[in-house]
Image (cartoon, rainbow, N blue to C red):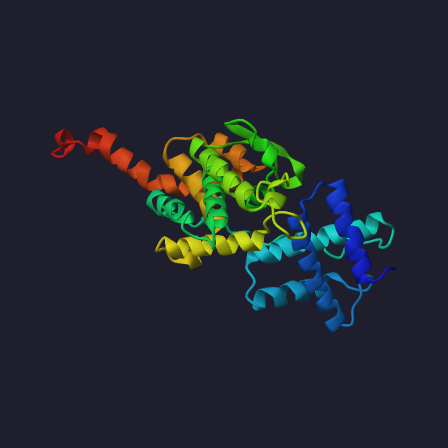
Length: 309
């Protein structure tokens, strides 16, 4: 049998090429396998010799180290798929994980930014940066993010050609290379236009790239890590606690604010690129207060005439 690193590479390649798994998800699977392989080495075990009770011991150690049930459940899923791959390749004849039940996942409520906080972030975006290009770029990035709710990986890799003319919707590829349409506001389009004008003026080399946010990185566009730092800088400038502000929080704000203003949950599911409606339903928590106020205002028993019944 091949060594663990080669087996891992073959497995991940099969997920990306055959199941259209995104590179970001594949990277998480790779990290999960690395942790599991370390456990195998510490216990002097191999993928051929490990048994169910030893797999259970691995997950018990993960929980004792403080990893959440969601993380442990994902690692179990990774390992089940890995052993299934080995069986399909004829390298094993059994899956030591198949009888292990998935851990109960807990639904976390997304961190919530108010509309006022988002406005402060948007207003501060154009003040953060070393020069006019960076300030205009940062403004465009955050305007697009809040206007569309797209994922960070989708945002930083946008193509400039998508914005020819004045499109109200653009077609992007999300997880698993699945395409969807997302909206672009007039404010975001205006920010993009100003940013591109500044970029053309100061760096014709980068301007020639078809990436909307080009850089000299390996991928040719702004990397995710740099965008996370930009968000922190903008949050600080807006007078917010940067610890609680991230690109994902602004994506959550997009969905939450749409829902609180009357948008249909199915529409939000489509815009976010969620496969299942249950994933989108985490946003319904924001309606609780609104529902209570509506009942208190409109239910007949809440009216004065009924108080003395």
